[in-house]
Amino acid sequence: MPAAWTPESSSRVVHADNLEVLRALDDASFTLIYLDPPFNTGRKQARQTTTSVRSDGGAGSVTGFKGQSYERIKGDLLRYDDRFDDYWEFLEPRLIEAWRLLADDGTLYLHLDYREAHYAKVLLDALFGRESFLNEIIWAYDYGAKSKNRWPTKHDTILVYVKDPARYYFDSTAVDREPYMAPGLVTAAKAELGKLPTDVWWHTIVSPTGREKTGYPTQKPEGVLRRIVQASSREGDWVLDFFAGSGTTGAVAASLGRRFVLVDRNSEAIEVMRERFAAVPGVEFV
Ligand SMILES: C[S@@+](CC[C@H](N)C(=O)[O-])C[C@H]1O[C@@H](n2cnc3c(N)ncnc32)[C@H](O)[C@@H]1O
Image (cartoon, rainbow, N blue to C red; front, side, top):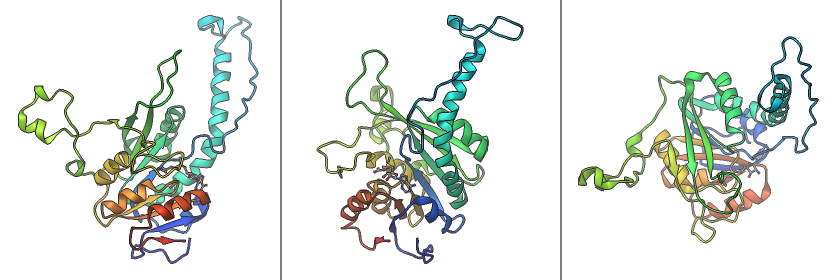
């Protein structure tokens, strides 16, 4: 990242590892940070073997369901902690930078897989303070193969934390409204206006044949980002996404009159963004 970035710069896309870029940015520069980190990065793929501690039935041992000892269950949990540790080791320094970069009225949206969301929630409460936790957004979709032996998992979790619970910016009136599920139960005027989205967002994934599709495998839908950008930033504000991928955050930010810094280390992502922003005036590639 050139030291030259200031709030007077134009929007930019940076091809680099995000940690070094973040460290060169000034404190409190961004009103909104949206992060969609890769699932599993830095995480050990191979299952680690656990030493199962068998209960000998002696004092202090507790036998749980199916005869498993408490120690065994605790061992299993620690194994999962170990696996999450690797992921967290990668994410933690970047989240600490994100926190530093948030403006006093700023908001962080962290988009996670359902397998990681709960660990991340506990750790983020500890890191940022529980009082800074604003919402857990569930993005529900219904597409692709469905398992038959459990409830098909068709949602992502977006954890929302604010820098300062007394000062954060949030404008619900700026958010696109959605149709009532039972319009007959409200007045015609209300039905016409639509309702404010709740913390559960039904939204299709990026359609494989739609206008939005860039071909980047983990691309998120603009509709989901639109709500986030509309609610948690104003026109002219700076928006940061340092796991930018296909640049959805930047595309939405630009369409809503916000400025952006996007970072990705993958050259494919940079190529996709070059194409995506070709028609957006004044976007610099660094
Ligand atoms: C899940 S994708 C983001 C997709 C994006 N939200 C979109 O709508 O296209 C995560 C991205 O993070 C990038 N990434 C992973 N580790 C990185 C790092 N250390 N520095 C910069 N980019 C990184 C990957 O190259 C990938 O493009």
